[in-house]
Length: 457
Image (cartoon, rainbow, N blue to C red; front, side):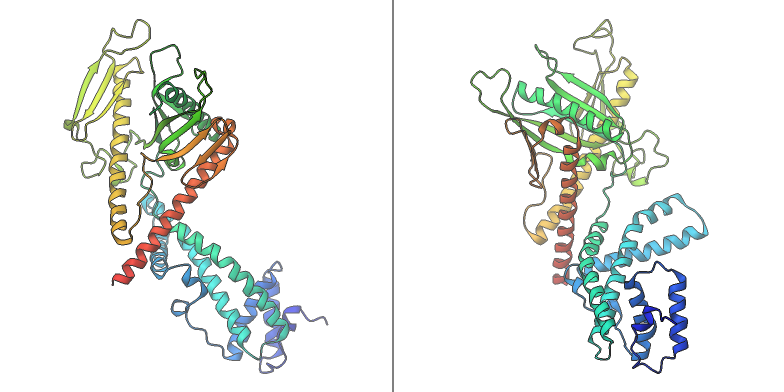
């Protein structure tokens, strides 16, 4: 009778393990799932037969120093284990009775728990395979297979560690919200207004391609021969999670090109400012208390008594409605002197609703940025160095002469400017690189902060 190959891996030196036991084990392994890989079979035999028969005693993983300890700090590992334990408790609670907030939290922690399990399994395999290889009684064929599995496990471990680090990054409080995208021309005169209009079209096209449902809430143009000179625009992207997708775009965008009015062919440099703001839904009943702008205890609550409301007549080009009815609204948040005006709608009520939406978004983003700045100042005091790029920093350059787009945070350069301005895959590639840069920067700050705190104790 042909002997299954897993049995031939076990040396006949271990005669105290009966043939019946081996045969029973092989049938269980092969009968359970014939698609089992060679690696899984080797590990199963190592754990079920060789370790007890040879008397191998492996130290618990928590107390073991593995090669991955240098890549994953003890502080991050402790944080991951605490979150995984919390996920287990929440899962047990959901098994007894369903709760929406509990389910949401469990879903947020699930990636950490799953990747931590992968990390533990990978380290467990490395420890067991090393123990098998260091034993002088290990069969030569089994030693060869264990060597291959050890190499593959070691190669996979850094990737698992990186995924675990990124899963530990706290999710942005506005990540699941829709957003408002505000575009304003900066330095550069008429050319800045013209490029701001092109950026408006770029983001509308990008959102439309992604199915994010963009709506232009406000589009003000400057008085002059060209209607393409934008003075201010606000786009509402109603899809949940739009803020997390587009928050890579906040900052100063620089354009370098020869204007149509330039007679000597000189390249001019202009700038456009982009702000991505959270958009809070009008129905706050299902929102977390921390984000409920109607709750006085929320950080994003706005006291109506601190807002001055002014009614105005709409200005600019238009028909009979313009300059004849007081449909325009201007809101001023007195403590911060934040001003929002809206006149695009014919109804004063509609303009008031939009103005409040933009005001809430601006104040919420400012408060969140202040909170992040406090954290960065704390980290800077511990670690030294520069905090992060803010909304006033130049983040990207669009060079028309070279058909080039360069993001200064990641260093990525794409020579397909027309495709980017059409909101195509090039823009998506740039934004993906910035998301990776944001995650890597956050992980580096977390690791450095944990190391500094550990040294100070």
